Each structure stands twice: as structure tokens, then as C-alpha cells.
Length: 257
Image 1 (cartoon, helix red, strand yellow):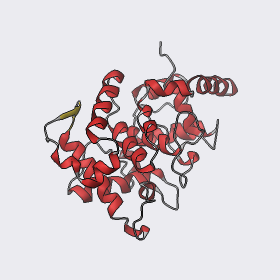
Image 2: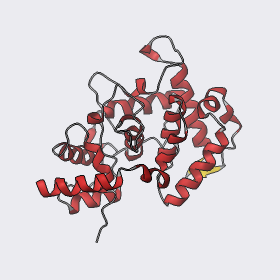
Image 3: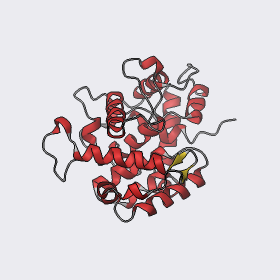
């Protein structure tokens, strides 16, 4: 166990560097200084972060160019309504999906629910934060409110199934966006949210990370779902209880034989 921790810690130190940013989708929220722009870009870019990395970066860049200098202004002004529904943004993510996301986020900023009167300091963190510090509940709240804004759910926002965790999605892309927004070591992740803590986060689980984790003996469950995310994150907390998802930098970098 100690040898494995040392191995993973070394990989974190190798990969969690400023040089990592230029080749990763996290580069896009780094382009902005306003918290609203950062969180909008984090969720949008994370949502299309699947498939070929070069394609992800190219398409994310094109998407943000469409949104102009301030994605927040673009969202709040309703500029997205001019998008063609059939316009391909990235693979199966089209103009209608980008409109769905933008319409939903505008709703979240304009209707703060129980958060009191809206002001310019409002952040989407309020949607994800709860007294239990349960990020799954936060994701469910986000998904439900986005559906309320649009009148329908979206396949591009994974369902954690809070009431039935054994059936829930791993929510990989949402957990990745949360990592960017919450982890605050001042290197790769931006850490602009302060109410949620790195210790609350769950590992972003994709096929590669899952296979590596099984090969290393961290998990033995075959499904890549919410339950496996919880099992793997729990194991990683044994190595660092305050920042378990830093090991995302290690697991994605392991080369499989």
C-alpha cells in the first residue's frame, strides 16, 4: 500500500504542473478572470470533453469563439438563441444542445431560488452546495434545474440518480468540471469555488482511469458507474483524505500494457 501511494504521488507530482495546462481542456477556463465566465466555460468544455483530444480542443476553441469575449454576457443576453439547432459543435453535441446549456445556466443565474436576491457575485456554486457537502446531490440539483429551465432533460447531463445510487451514472464530465472549479493548489485547477472543499470531490471516472485502477488493485468492480466512483474515491482518501481527486493526475497518466 505504501509503495502504491508513493508511485501515485510521484505521478501526481510529474503531471500536476503548469505545463500540463496547454494540452488539456482545462486551458479554456484559464483564459478568463471573471468567475461567471470561468464556471460557464468549465461546464461547457467539460461537457464536450470526450473522444479525440485534438478534436476536443479544436471544437472547444470554436465554441468559445462563437460566444465572444465574455461567455457570461453571451448567456445572459440570449445570444445563443441565434444558433442553428443542427449546427455540430462536437460529435453528438449540436447547436440545440448548446442552447439548452446556455438557457439553463441563464435560468440558474436569474432565479437564485432559496439563495435570496440575485446580485453580481452570485455563482453556480450555490446550485451544487448543500449542508451535507454531497456533490452527488449538487449534480442532481443542477440536472433538475437545467431540465426545469428547458422543459426536458438532456442526455449530455448525466443522471446520478440520488435516490438509487446503484443505478447512477459516474458523471465523469461533471466531476471533472467540479475538480477544475474546487481544487485550489494553484497549479492546474482553478479553485474559484470556496464553499465546496477538495475533500468533497469524487474522482472523474472514464474507461482508462477505471482500467488502470483495476490493474493497480484499487477497485475490483467491473461497472463504470456511480458506485465504482465512490469505491475508488474512498480508496484514494486513504492516501490523501483532504484531496483524493489529485490522483486523477496519476491515474490518467499510467500507461496500460
